[in-house]
Length: 210
Image (tube, rainbow, N blue to C red):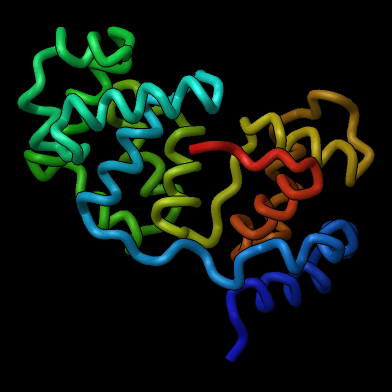
């Protein structure tokens, strides 16, 4: 039985020879399969941590996440976030906007408005729409969560600078190529756009920290 990576490479060889050629030197560095299934609490931890670390350096994001984990009593859960006062979240180093976003996320999960494990069972665009309906969660955060926490196979982030720069180099595109052109090229990779993204990040050694 072929693994996820093998199926993706076979598809790219037929659908996009340029991507396939760029991918060959990086094959051994890529995982055979996408993320293993995580439980409800692990998914919340991953998404909350991603929100906490937005627009920060890797080191600063790690520090804030650990402060948040400590404030939550060791585990970042919806219940723990709901119990914390905004002042305590701010004391952990979170901005007012991130504090509001985490509170909104915790409430949505606790009230059943957002079922994180259920996002595995609906189309990627619908899953992204549900995530971005939460205040403070933008498309990039949603796309990274779908890729790395949920292991969704067909996700591409046209707003990720590393992916954009890699595509400009591989396809000879002008700098800051139009989003529509990037999306057009990415359609050939479906249903393996997540693996295509991993390949593109590898070509620039620019995998995001989430």
